[in-house]
Length: 142
Image (cartoon, rainbow, N blue to C red):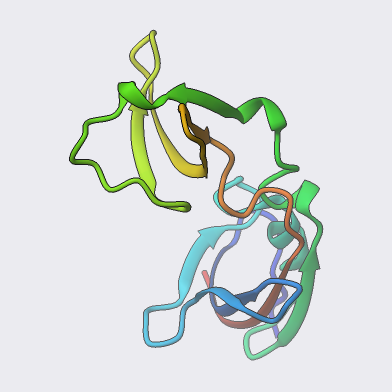
């Protein structure tokens, strides 16, 4: 039976959980995830775990934050004066916003803190700083 190697395109079903057991993503009810092994299309810790698997194999992979979305960067949290936000904007912790940097780059950010005079925005990936666990089943190799 063929084993996965770098350069192969694979299809797999997965369930991703955090250390508290909560599910952050899953292919349940959807088509399997397809990607080329070793191409950087998925987080490195998951990419490294797939070579050697055969169709039908299942495994649980724990990916440390450094091999997932990296550690949370305190510099990615920035306070912004409240008067910079439209008055009708719903400001709540965790709300996702898009902001434009002075050089025109658009960033996805989340509201991390709401203070009297300012709102703290966080541009870290929502899973930054978190170890991730994936239950994977390889369903195809091409």
